[in-house]
Length: 193
Image (cartoon, rainbow, N blue to C red; front, side, top):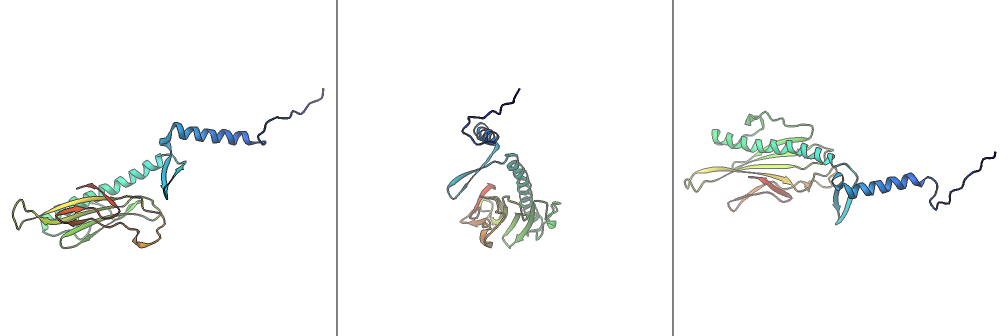
């Protein structure tokens, strides 16, 4: 018996079957499970990245650390002011046991006579959001004309910090006290007061 070679009448080039099946599978997965993929915009165009959403969830967990730390620093500044009539100059002054640097963020404080600012900036090579907290010394007019009280605010950057920054002015503005109101700076959104 002689063996006959069979020829395919397919219009597809040899070896395309697997690639085509993978392509169809990926498109099907996007349509059936859109939550498994990240979507973002670049210059008004929507782009899909085929990255599981659990990576986004990991970033949210990392950012949760920063939110908690900055909120704690705000409360710590308010308590420190109540006891000492001045703001704490360092994180250790607040007695919170917060580290100034973790795997994900660097934390710092800046103090003026009438305000204390808390910062959480992502470490290099971390595309995470930054968080800013402020405690302001303001008139407590409902108590007494001369009485002062503290008010706080926690703000989050509108976008993740880029891995590569082109100019140092990329950092968002810190919160301000203006016209009797505490507001987040440009490029940030209020989370809590």
